[in-house]
Image 1 (cartoon, rainbow, N blue to C red):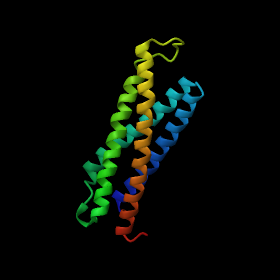
Image 2 (tube, rainbow, N blue to C red):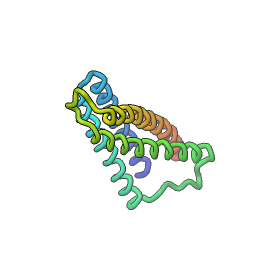
Image 3 (cartoon, rainbow, N blue to C red):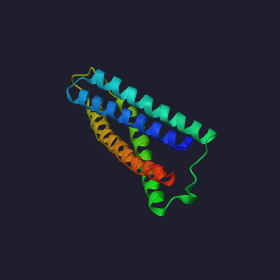
Length: 152
């Protein structure tokens, strides 16, 4: 196994951890435990930000993947994967922005606060769905990397 594959396996575990923590946070919100929800989501966000930083370090020290020996199927799945990740990052960033627009202690939220909460919930679902799809496509891509190295 080369260093790039090792990196992607590490990031896969990191992403799975972030998703599981986010799902736990979503369940907390469903129970009305909004402060616990906020803590879980903050941790999930930190893990994703850590992933982004380590990805930049990977690009600097290990470089990009050599796609010359990838089949067109894997390249297509890679592009789909990158789209899911972009959707996750953009929707997650906006969800975080929206979360700052309302108070967790407000028992009678204003109309604008209610609208922000509704968008927050909707985009939160988009974000977690994109993250799950990104993890699924990453699994396929990692399998391809392992196959190209004769590991499976």
